[in-house]
Amino acid sequence: MYGAIWRALPGPTWLKAIEALALILLAVYLLFEFAFPWIMENTNIVDNTIG
Image (cartoon, rainbow, N blue to C red; front, side, top):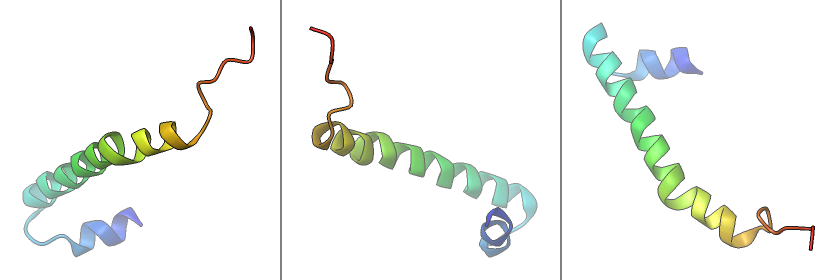
């Protein structure tokens, strides 16, 4: 999978590295901004079972 993404990125190696880093940062941002808050609202992961 990573090889296919690497080959799909345009430009020389140094530009591909920058683009890959930008894609990773974008994925992390989207997870923290949208996915993780949605998961916390829709699951009971943090509910304590000890009273």
